[in-house]
Image (cartoon, rainbow over all chains, first blue to last red; front, side, top):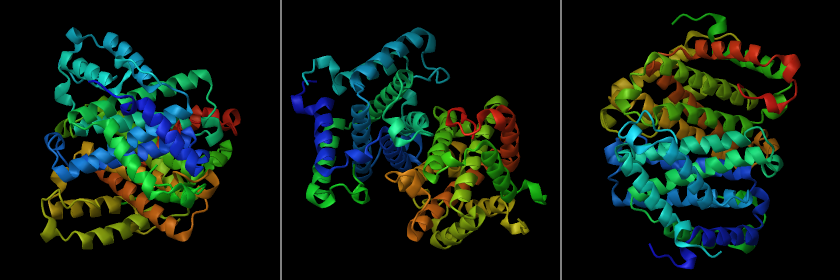
Length: 120
Length: 120
Length: 120
Length: 120
């Protein structure tokens, strides 16, 4: 799990900021627009799985997997960008959410039940 | 931008894997289901901005911002989980996508134009 | 399939227009905002099915079905409203789309294959 | 607002049912899959408005408008199909929802305020 400095979300954030600034696209990157772009990418992701069974969705052929990888990348890009514009630390936010969920759904109580899945 | 080992996507991935395994929820985490969960969270994000102007979306009051932060965290959680199940390295995928976009949209050609925004 | 005048999309359109006008909400109903509202409702729909199998999604208990019915109603409401603001006749548009799809996917060629499902 | 029999949602429902039956696609049309397809189309709609201002979204050029019309048609198609599979009467459901909203948001109380927009 060793990671170099430029394999982190922080690095991605800075690269995206520069990308937008160089193109003067910052003006279009309101949180509203970015969240719209994010959900549009999420839907492209969903489209790949639309008519597949759950099992099929876990065993994608290589060409399909490459496309799905691009959608996931796009989502991460807009997510990072939106968080940056709102001055939110994504990793810290996710850790806080997990702290909450680990208490809310104690393993021994919810084991194996999809009825209790809400937070994750 | 200094980051400790447990402030990384890699760390989050492992914590989420353990979370699901402890609750025997792995069985529900097909890529299809996870992408559905992701888009549902994306829509909760979008809902916060629905009736706001772009300007308002950039100046959220503290209570609203805290809610938005939770939605972003939820999206990151499902995104990380889906990538894990598909054995995709999110950061590398995003970097590859950016390499492509930087060539596709040269700064001098697209500056300030929203017409050319597609990849980011 | 007999229908009275006030059981039609046209009637719904007029009632929604009056609803918005009476509340002076027309100003918020840009096509952009309405499509955002629509996708947020679509995500609430999706949320109901998120952790269900396909079979379970077809056999909802009564309370869940009532909730799903409300989501479908919300989607129709925003869809009708968006079409109205853009001066689009929904039924005619759907009929044109079906004309296209019936030619694009001849029954004898695509029978039983999910690979060829795209248009519907 | 005069409508012939075959310009109604009921007619569309029957035509879609036949379309699916002729192709043996009924097996893929679980409510879960149809709601996924619906949200994917909703995202295609949203994508058209993504980088536009609200004003621009209300003044689309003809070619763009034709594309948006197709997205709206696709949404109506999946919505009608999902309602049919769940045995839900869309128009009645929308009317019930409006009955509720008209009481919940009395015109004199909410006039001109986007803060109170929730139900529509």
